[in-house]
Amino acid sequence: MGYADPLVGRDLLWSLSLSFVVLCAFSVITLVEQDHYGNNYVRSGQQFSRLHEDEAGNWSGLNLPDDSPLRPARYGRRRCLESSQGLLEFNSTSCQMLRKDILDVKVLTEVKTSELFERWRNLQVCQWEQNKVESNNLSVSLSESCNASSFLFTTKRNTPSGTKLRYETDGAVLIKPQIFNMFPDDMPYSRSEFKRCAVVGNGGINLNSQCGNEIDSADFVFRCNIPPISDEYSADVGSRTDFVTINPSILIGRFQSLDKWRLPFYKHLQSYQNASIVLPAFYNRINTDVSFRVKYTLDDLGSPHDVVFFHTKYLLNVQRFWALQGIHAKRLSTGLMLVSAAMELCEEVHLYGFWPFPTNPAGDLITHHYYDNVKGRPGFHAMPEELFNFMQMHARGILHLHTQPCC
Image (cartoon, rainbow, N blue to C red; front, top):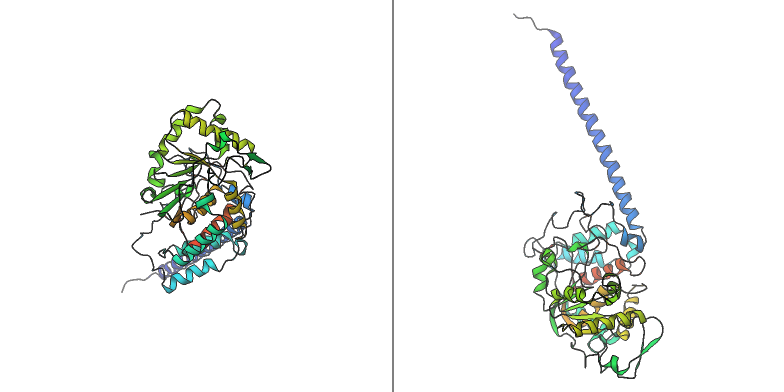
């Protein structure tokens, strides 16, 4: 009979016991770290949600140069929901409950930003469907209050020669014959003239969205502030444009008020083909001068673009209308002005690039614009409140707010 060393069994037992203790200790440390990280993440989300509108609109997370290898992730690399697969029916019980989660929030301050994002992400599993009754009701309300089909632009019909047209700020401008002759005879659009319209914002959420073809397939395309639509960006934002605005601050800063940079400005507009160029000429006297230069420049150089000016009556009425919906700002964003007009002029409205936060709904960092990370003027617009209203209208089937990549 062989000899069995009793130390061997004891050593084996000791090794197993030691391994078990190490494994337990590692598990405990991991749980503590995860709990610590989770608490930090929640605290950071709460801190972000408590930021004032100015801070939330300009918070950019990591301060990274544009050429950094650690630039913000672009939405679309995480996931892409197929439009015809894996989505729940609009009127399913689950989708009714998910829409209710959005609609139950009456004002933006009722929820943390992180919670709002979560509710919005959850809703993305549901197909969107237009509620024609709700959509028409809002269109009628806007038409009664603002009347885009008659007063979106200054025309010879709504602003006769000799009229004193009120500025949006202070004072008024006398419509002399030379100004009157710049106006179109009448409004070129009528209520519900277009079937499906795309209103394209300039938010960084457009990057890698692959929504260009969907945007270009719309019956009418609105854009804000002559953004780049070159081949570099067309896959995400499309290239077709029917209506594009220009903020006079762009003309002053980028084109030296058209004192000398007339030809570069003319060439810049070539990518917009025959789109109407729309300016807030009657916001104040400075805007009037530089907006008129746009008209003179394009006429002198034989441009095919129609140049038209927002009517101050329309813009002031739109401001009042949305103030009643809880949007209080020094001035509405150009995007909301265009959405308001589209709701009157189009049967179905789709929004792209409207997301004023520094992260997309999935939590990835994004740039402020799809073409740069330059922030807007703080405290001038109420972008989070505007987006909140778009979310509510999406949930009610009034318009379709696109924040997922188009597949």
